[in-house]
Image (cartoon, rainbow, N blue to C red; front, side):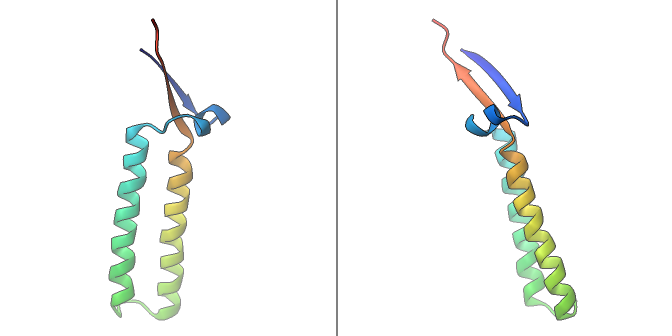
Length: 79
């Protein structure tokens, strides 16, 4: 089985995402979600500042998801 890696190309988007890229996104999503839940439930920050920070964290989630999709692996069976 031959493995071909792609990064930052159209082929990468259409190929299978590598496990490390999926894990990178999942860890970021879990950490930012935990921080978001904690910050929403406390009064540490003012409401306007809290809004800005939460938007920043969710923007980071979207960025990491897009970044994780820019890597691809294509497997070819060689007989």
